[in-house]
Each structure stands twice: as C-alpha cells, then as structure tokens.
Length: 167
Image 1 (tube, rainbow, N blue to C red):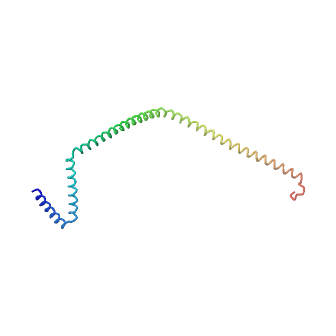
Image 2 (cartoon, one colour; image 1 turned 180 degrees about the vertical axis):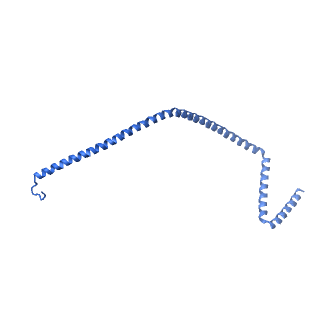
Image 3 (cartoon, rainbow, N blue to C red; image 1 turned 90 degrees about the horizontal axis):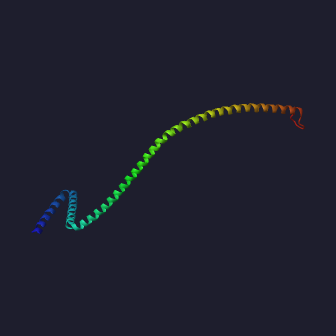
C-alpha cells in the first residue's frame, strides 16, 4: 500500500513539474535543484541520528582538541598579561627617571646657553680684533712695499744696467 501511495505521489509530482516547466522553465529547474539540496540535507541529518555513537566519538575527540587549544590560549593570555605588567613597570620607571632628569637638563640647558653667549661675545671681539690687525698689517705692508720700491728706484738710477735698451 505504501508503494502504491508513493507511486501516485511521484506521478503527481512529475505532472506538477511538467506543467510548471512549460510555464517557467528557469524557475522550475532552480526549484528542483533546491528541492534536491533539501532532500540531501534531510538525508544527512537522518544518517547522523542513525549513527549517534560514531558522531559522539568524533565530538569527544573534537571537544578534547578544543579543550587543549583553550588551555594553550589561556597560557598565551597569561604570558601576554605578564609581559604587559613588565612593560608597564618599565614605563613607570622610565617616567620617574625622566621626571628626575628634566630639572637637571633644564639647568644644564641654561648653563649651555650662557656658555654659547660668552663664546659669541669672544667671537665678536676676536672678529673685530682680526679685522683691525689685518687692516693695520695691510697698511704696514703697503708702507714697507713703498719704501722698498723707492729704494730700488734710487739704486737703479745710480747704477745703470750695461747693454740694456731700458735706461
């Protein structure tokens, strides 16, 4: 009796598909494809219920793997927390050291600025001194050059050069 009911149902379904395909072929093919996927999904679900022992073993193995992964993750998180605590401690120490060094650096900065100002004053004095000395030495060199030239002229006047066309 079930076979006869199944045959009637299958015949009715095929008649419905044929009628639908003649009106809308694309939608009918997509519907058949979706219906096939739904039947396959239901069949897989049924197989999972039929073989519960195999699935339970697999699930236990997966749960053990997940538990091991979670333990490793917990250790990693603890290590990261410890690293963060150490970094925070180092950062706090550096901030304290910075606070101690800032006044010293500011004091040294003022001292360095004063030294630079003093050096600038000396450089200005040295510049004017070297300019003045250069000017004086230039005048002295011109004076000495003039004396030497006039001496040479006098010497040449008194002693003529033999066989020279310039006299």
